[in-house]
Amino acid sequence: MKLKKRKIKLAAIFGICWFALLVLLVDGILKFQTLVDFVGSYALVEISLILLVILPTVAVYVFTKE
Image 1 (tube, one colour):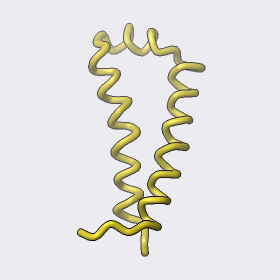
Image 2 (tube, one colour):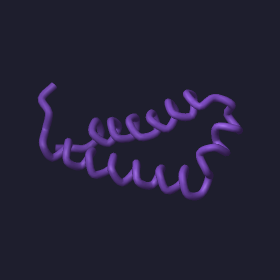
Image 3 (cartoon, rainbow, N blue to C red):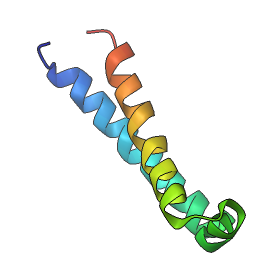
Image 4 (cartoon, rainbow, N blue to C red):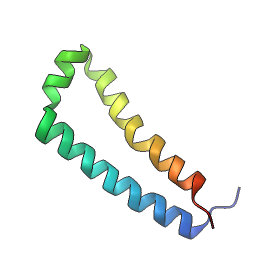
């Protein structure tokens, strides 16, 4: 699969904006410790937040038309 510069650029912009929104949401509004207390595992919260950034970014790359 050949990587396309335009697709990478759009996915990177989306990834950065999505990451910033999640940081604002988790650190500012929901409070990270509240999420850890609710879920019960620090590692599970970290993995889910990482996947919430990576998976949509990959989806944007895959579904972006050249």
